[in-house]
Length: 113
Image (cartoon, rainbow, N blue to C red):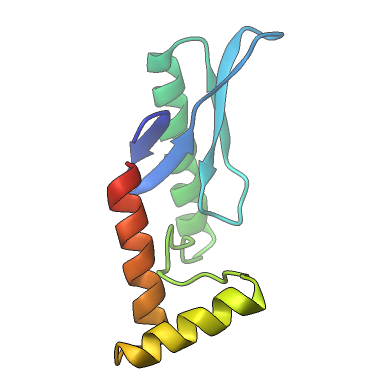
């Protein structure tokens, strides 16, 4: 994946501020806001890793379970017409709505990466 950092199963964005002349980002997929910055890709990566480690250390100190990066479920809102078509397609192919949506997403991702 381009423009993403990865460390211990966590992913961070990479952005640039022209005003501040600094790279910055945030860990994605969490409710908690974890941000980091650096003046080079190397320093950005180090600050990202330190931010993730700090988050995990804080969770351990407070005896909290770190947020799961991805649970495998999320809500998707679609038009009623698309919802109906997904249900009809699923029924006609003897599969669940979840299986149909997962299949469609996999197909889209595989053809667009």
